[in-house]
Length: 306
Image 1 (cartoon, rainbow, N blue to C red):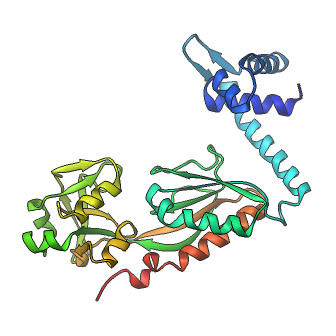
Image 2: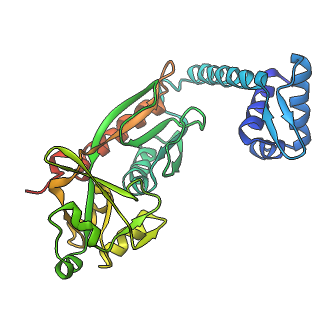
Image 3: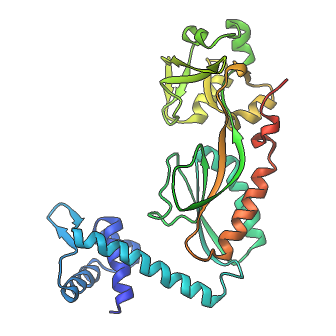
């Protein structure tokens, strides 16, 4: 067995945290995976994986070797892609990540357009409400909402979103439109547990932050459910502006307390820059950035009504 293949097997075992899971990922048998790791450890002369009947974890030597394997295999892939012309012609597999609802509303339509234009590319879209480690999970391009904290990445700002409070016009007609954030303590509130805006809502009053402790009458596990409950007149919710842009435009939801909103959150298209950037990444980043930058719901110029 060649050493590059052994490295791929070891990488799969370490990332999947098991021989059987690694075998499924590599589409081979668990005994062959076990033999490959054992042969590698024997040749190197040190233990890379500590095994028990219930668990498997990397030794210190294994952790260092894992990092080297990732680097070497990435360089090998880069060399093969360069030889195949992938730095001039978009082709191969692309992995993209974005928040769930943002991905469904804004990224997914762009994926289809891009694939129609570049037939040699295939895409996997990881839509999750967490910050994906791009290097660890093999992600080429990410959409980030909020301020960036990851080093070694390139980012293109494509817009921004607001943190808005909204309710249906019928609910506001019956219960009144709050003029001050403190009045939210008396309102029926529905929140999503997947949101970062659950227990405390921050506003700005006369240039100073104002934090309001929120005790929701109802908490659901998805943003869409909270939005639908607000749209149906049950109560008020706080979400990101892009999530309710269509409902607000249709008159199904109304924004309140806009004068007290905190600064908008930036939206970036992020990609790794380790050496030369493949054509599939360059073209997709340009394509996605242009589409998102043209969207009125993400355009700062339209963020506030007069």
